[in-house]
Image 1: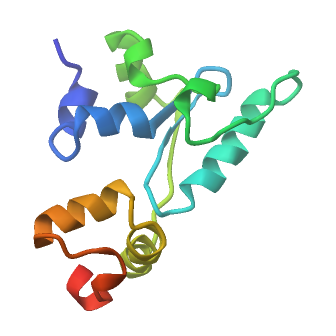
Image 2 (image 1 turned 90 degrees about the horizontal axis):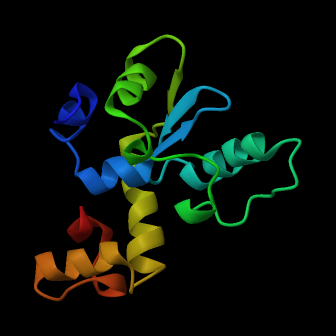
Length: 141
């Protein structure tokens, strides 16, 4: 059985995205939904630092959920997931960015700056092999 929260999310994203981009804090009662290219690494560092406050633990790698103090949706019951997303007892947080600057950032960081990235590989598949520095920003868009 799927929760209403999961059903709604899966209308626009994959299950993998839901698990990887949802960061739940039971300690501080919030859920952070990560949006790539919107300062997500900086936000995760700040939130993980908050979670580790007054503990011997430190932030190790914000992009590896294995080291994160947050839990993922699969780690809570369906009832708890519904409460986390629907009740006022949990804060819901997401940061978004101007879509044009986000697009430019993606192009510069993932296509030009890292030609071996998954994003660039997907672009090369879609364009029949054109990607990295061989593709202009206009073509990328």
